[in-house]
Length: 297
Image (cartoon, rainbow, N blue to C red; front, side):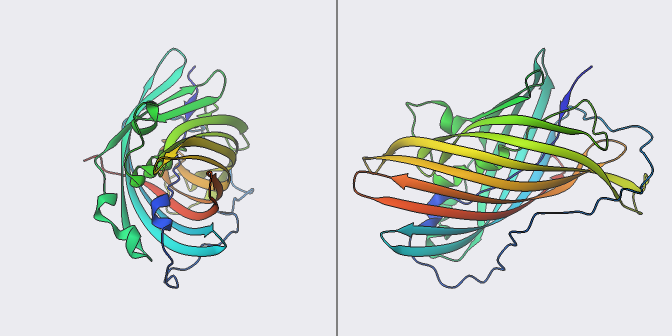
């Protein structure tokens, strides 16, 4: 019997948007409190737990990221809104799932002029991901980070980081009360550097009451993420390394009958330390991201 995966997405702003000082943000600061949709323990059990169907899907991801860049004793703050479209086409294999997809990211608003560069709109960038259901290991790699001989392309390709949470090794069904842990390994670009990330994610499943739904409930999948990032390369012909940690909480709602994603929200904090021969800097990103499936155009 096949195991399966669920979908959630996280988008991050381009590091290139950090340059220059910014006027006071006009955006509301996202809350650092954990995302929470109240589960109802008094609900009756499902007639049967939903199962994931491997099918081509398209997702709309909207992210608001507050970026604080500390360098040489000065702090610069920027708020960036990014919209991404992710196409994912999963197929069953002998080991689990293989997913081919692509993502396009576009900066819609920003509080600094540098983040409004029209070059921030890219052609679709492909990615391939595998879900090994026997080991609960998820691997994700994009074209931009696949070859060490090829440099990362424009900073907006960091929108590929939005797709790293797309795949999740899950139990055979989304049964209320289920818990599991998986590991996620990704390779994507951040600015001009290819960066590898290793994450551990912990999941729980419950029900929430939705009177308008035919089943009267929706399945709520919540998870936490703890990740470490490392990358090395050259920026302006200067050797540079980057290290960081990311913590996130997320909740996604699934149809109790079909198991399809209805929508979700993720809140995350990422701290990156960059170092070179003559400079060091710290970048903090706080992001609030929503995801929902849309018609496949």
